[in-house]
Amino acid sequence: MKLHNAMWPGLVGKEPGTDHPPISLDRMLEMTAAAEVGGRRFDGIDLFLFHPHIDPDASDDDLRAMADKIAGAGLKVGSMVAPVWPGTVGGSAFGSQDDRKNFVLAVEKSCRIGGILRDHGVRDCGLIRIDSAGSVADWAKDPAGNTRKIAETWREAGKIAEQHGERLAAEGEICWGGMHSWKAVLDTLEATAMPEVVGFQADIAHTYLYLMGYNAPEAALLQEGYSDEEFWSAYKTLTDALRPWTNDFHVAQNDGSVHGTGSHDKTGRHCPADDPAGKLEIARCSTYWLQDAAARGIRHICWDGCMFPNDILERQQTWNTILATMIEVDEAF
Image 1 (cartoon, rainbow, N blue to C red):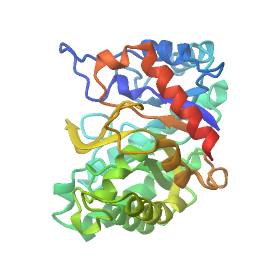
Image 2 (image 1 turned 90 degrees about the vertical axis):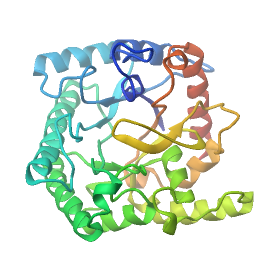
Image 3 (image 1 turned 90 degrees about the horizontal axis):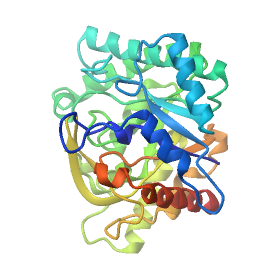
């Protein structure tokens, strides 16, 4: 399995002029390329298609120049995060007609970029990542109607993706309406009804909160103080339900707390791979999701550590530890 590092930890939750400013794509590439454990390195990166890393409307020449830089670092490109949220290119998948039109436009722009990178040769795996781009509170005003709207928007985006030879993966986070619980995810994907094109992106830090029922207590599979036996039984229920839809995968760690920044309100807090407060046996948890991964088109896995403090992100040892964890996952399944 190819091992990728996400570039968006340099952007998500970062604000210019503060003590946690954005970290450039060049710097993220530098630290990724420098990581090495036992002679093994990262194979590639996953990209966030928005400023300041990438202009969604960048020219073909600018995109090829970026591809040259990535390839020159000995890396490939895998999955890409489409700028589907309000304030970027897109809008809520269950919002106004303009919002939903812009959501599809964000996917279309991402497909264009993906095609250029494929033609260049720097991209040979991965898909385009989306979510519902709307809050749980807004979704809850009309659960059935808003789930229907998300499914309709995703189908339109899926048609665009299919025309470009792409697939979409909806990232499961409790902050997104219609995706805030494992049962809501199933309802939304089943309503979309494009299993070969529109699937699920599982992040083991975020999906841990599905078990605990944050934002959806009625869907909780565990209660605080759970035993080890109860955890693995619940984890099997969760992964058996969502694994058939899973077409993209994030390795991560979670300390069980809930955190948010901006539009990512009350979502899972990623923490360092070796954090003693981590709730997850990362390699073992990953095997539950990665059974028959190749049959679902998964050719790479990606580390996600967004919302890490900059001082942690800027330490080279952080990336070596992450790479070592990724290798453990690769060797475990």
